[in-house]
Each structure stands twice: as C-alpha cells, then as structure tokens.
Amino acid sequence: MVVRHLRRLLAGRRIEQARLLRPRLVPDLTPRQFALRLRGAGIDKVGRRGKHIVIELGNGWTWITHLRMSGRFQLLEAGLDPKAEGIRFTHATFRLDDERQLIFSDQRHFGLMMVVETARLGEVASLRELGPEPFDADFSCDYLESRCRESRQAIKLLLLDQSKVVGLGNIYAAEALFRAGIDPRLAAGGLTRRRLVRLHREIVEVLREAIEVGSTLNTDPQEVYGRYGNGAFEDNWRVYDREGEPCRKCGELVRRFTQGGRSTYFCEVCQR
Image 1 (cartoon, rainbow, N blue to C red):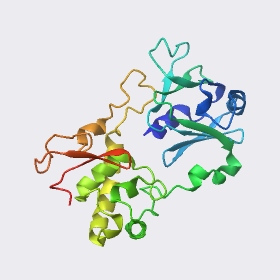
Image 2 (image 1 turned 90 degrees about the vertical axis):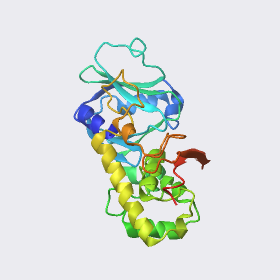
Image 3 (image 1 turned 120 degrees about the horizontal axis):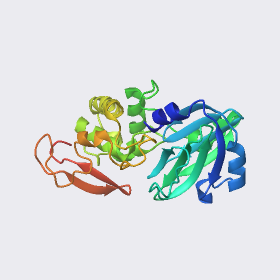
Image 4 (image 1 turned 120 degrees about the vertical axis):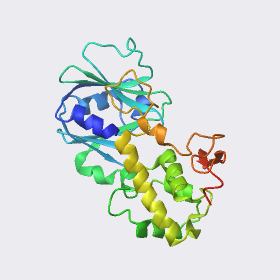
C-alpha cells in the first residue's frame, strides 16, 4: 500500500534537494554523497521488492528504502515545517519540483536507505536473497511444500523468513495460520499436503483482503496527521493483538506467546 501511494504522488516528479538528518539511516554514504546522488533526479519508477521500496531515478541511480518497524513517508505542502506540523523523528527530507516536501520519519530509528547504481541492482544482497512474492506464480503450493519439507522450523517462523516468502510479516502470518486452522508452533516439515494447500490459499486471501480494505497501517503520505497504526484491516483481525479476548469462531480466549522474539497470537481450540 505504501508503494501504491508513493507511485501516485511521486511518479514523474523531480527531487530538487535531499537532506539526510540522521546519517545512520544511510550507512554506506555520507550525507553529502546521499544528497548529490538524489539532487535533480527525476523519478522514473516506484516499485517494491519484498518490504523494500525501490525507486528508479532518471540519473542512473536507484533509491531503496526499508521502513522496518516504524519508518514512514509524509508529504507536506510547500512552506510547511515538519516540527510545526507535529512531525517528530524526521530523519530525511526531500524537496520536490512542485515545492512540496517529502519527509521520512522513524520513531524507532530502524529504517534503512541506500542509493545504488541501477545497472547493478541485481547485485544488492538484501534484494537478491529474497524469496518469491506471495502473488507471484513462483509462490505455488508446490513451492511452499518444498520449503516446508526441508525445514525444521515452526511454521510461523518459516512464514516470517524473507528468504522463503516475502511480505507476510507478523500480523498476516498469524492471521493466515488462524484461518488455515494450523497451530503456529507445529514443525513446518510435519504438515500434510492437505494442510499446506489450505495454508497457501489463506496466505494469498488474507493479503488480498488487506490490500482491498487498506492494510493495517495509515500508509498514505498525505494523511500527515492520522495515527500511523490506524489501518482499516485492524477490524478484520481474528487473533492478532487480541490476547484474552474471545475467539471470533469458537469463543475460547485468544492466547499470546513469544516466538522468535515476536508475539504470536492463536486459538488453542481452532488451531491444531
């Protein structure tokens, strides 16, 4: 959803000025190098690979951003100051050719950016090592089964492994497993073909629904003043972030436990 909004707002625009305010956001470049590579560049294409926002520029460079936990783009009208508008944790600013200002803010400071030669995009390790996209033909049920058969991981952890499949994330993995009736603690390699067919179907379906209703985040850069974690798909959550609440299917209380350093929510009755 972030890329859809950015594509609508940025495609065909030009970056007049780029300012890096937090150097660790772009660890491989100095603020000056970062500014020079982006300054005056036209925005040719806004795309995505996994959780990476990939923006191809007309000057031979490609600007890549990983939002991580709390990174956010916000678009301000000309003349407005980020601090005056209540935008905190501003790490980079980009003045566009229409005088509007694109802000990158990040409360937790985990976001990352890089600017690489477009001709060498295939050599970027963080992109090369990614698995298939959930909507691509490569992410078939046969593919999912083959990855599970060779793994000793719990199925929830396998779904979060970006080298196996990209773009699921903690929320959608938990929701897909609930819909498929699969306990997130089960070993991926022990799941039957029948259960994996259903899981594959629910992964695709839960992501499609999230896109249709607007994801779990307020991702529109023009919604500057809205709460970031206020996406429409929150209303559709069956188990995620519902610890102690009744399961919407059976009434049993939803449980939470830590798995791979992340919270996992599930229903003991519905997920076996």
